Length: 237
Image (cartoon, rainbow, N blue to C red; front, side, top):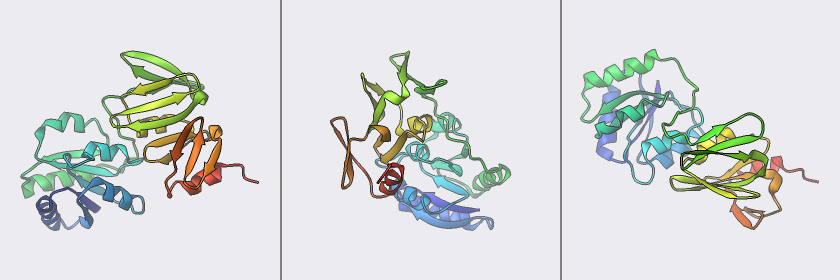
């Protein structure tokens, strides 16, 4: 299995790499000190297995998993035993290894990973606050109430830390959720993620200039990697 290692501590990466060298079926392709570098790599490459630390600066292991559309198998490697229950709410996580990791325990995790067929299931989070309905409705959980939003009325979704702001023609909603979760709920023909923090309704665009778009009074940045897809969506003369 081709694998990568993600851990902010160099010593921890070295130990995992040494453990991998004792398992002939494992091929370590790369090691990364943070999740962002790994995301860039995975945008261009496929792997079978990821060894992932939970506690990393800026971007936790769980945040990282949420960014993956079709995550490979993942083995968590951490010094913190307190997230085991949360971890197994994700279909892609096959084992939870608490440091220090013995070779015997490591091999059991690999045996488990090899016995599981490839999955393309999306990660399932415990705190799902965005739910779909039939037709053009989207329900969001705000203060223990399910609020119905007309999907075509949404013109912008913006990530704000642990929350997202959903802007509609009539009202704005702040929801405890992630951009990835709502992206999966929105129809592809209307919505496009143009930046790591923004999803726009392409039908609501007023103006495009350089690397930004204007919707209502909001100027939204467009990342270089997402600009080609945006231009494909437009009905250009």
